[in-house]
Image (cartoon, rainbow over all chains, first blue to last red; front, top):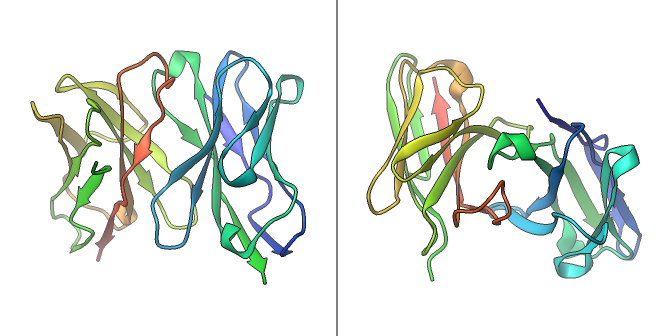
Length: 114
Length: 115
């Protein structure tokens, strides 16, 4: 069974700082990879996804993520965060043999100080 | 275009009781998945319904059951509630597709508290 690890549980940054949130998964086969965001009081929304092709994927609001297959990683990045990026971020994996099931990491709570 | 809707938003039950949660998928979607999100954790997959049948199930006991109606809406039923069932229950819908090629859209969730 696949699993997902997000190593940073809480991150505090000042506005304009750069962001990188780690995500590692354990599964040896082909995967789809996702980052979801949950803003305060709102529901989960898709930030970006990787299915195949260019391992560097760009999402909404200036976020991007890089799939490094050899490291089983899919880290999320943003060059300059804003106060409005304060939210909880979840990495999720879907494995080819797991149908449509998403396996989520434990989440990273990001706070951006104005 | 309405997104995924869930009802009720909050619910309080006591141990041993039964609960039913409801979900209406996003317009055009015919596949519904349910997830449980305990406090401070990521969502965990419970099961998925397609064409009114359970297509896939996660590691949850038989106390958790579901149903999908011809209009694609879905119910999650939990019997013999335990304190540990307290969580946010999320519904997600998507178009049919191969192994999650289709983006799953999540509803706001139902927060269940078991006392």
